[in-house]
Image (cartoon, rainbow, N blue to C red; front, side):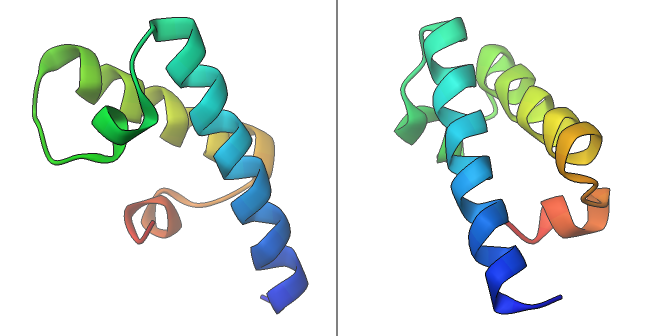
Length: 65
């Protein structure tokens, strides 16, 4: 994968993170954090789902984020 594609995906992932944060009324910092609180885990799952569906990323690639 080229740097350009990675940069684009980073921007889009940031937009997905922001969108999930707004929809669920959870801060981005909380979503990115290490807490295993149910609402935060659901938010992370939603981000991974959209990354796979919209960006064509693999779940393995999502895990590296």
